[in-house]
Image 1 (cartoon, each protein chain N blue to C red):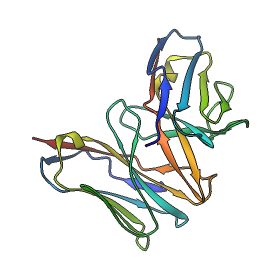
Image 2 (tube, one colour):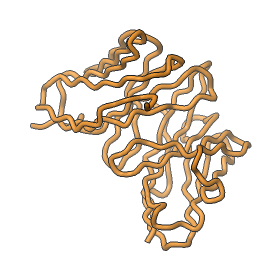
Image 3 (cartoon, helix red, strand yellow):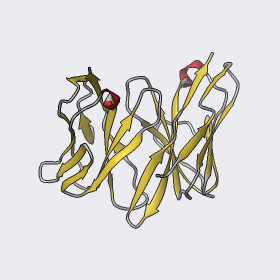
Length: 112
Length: 117
């Protein structure tokens, strides 16, 4: 079993829709949770990170962590064609020696 | 936000030659740098972790004699693919981490696409 599971998609939604992207993880030591966006042939870009359980909002993006169920989500409101990309969830435990553990990424396509 | 650059952005080389890829953190000092490779439609695979002035720590299955990593300073790391072969063709991405207490935000470079003929 992978430490972080993520549906690879692709996920296709019309412009303006609310998008829900999800990951599950198995290691309860994970404390920080990140969402990266990666456009084709580019490096990942950090969108948001959260610590422990709870919600965090930044513009049209909301990250949500539920540590009791080991479930992390990213919601995108009013989705735009420019949101079309691969979204990678990632987790890390505490300590500077720790490494990111990535999900496989979900490809999102927002259509006009 | 923090910026990480990579050079070159793409390179084509003949089989048997060596290729060096540079990774720089432009506006911050990185305590740790990471090298990943990514195949089409797949997630990032960590190759190695390096701290400035120390030998890199390679992930299982990654040949350290083939993928040479030099972390010369807090802003520069290089990856040299030695005696490259077509199976080494991939997208190589570096990442730099800023340490802040128990958590270090990790920023990624734009990637280098290597094609070995």
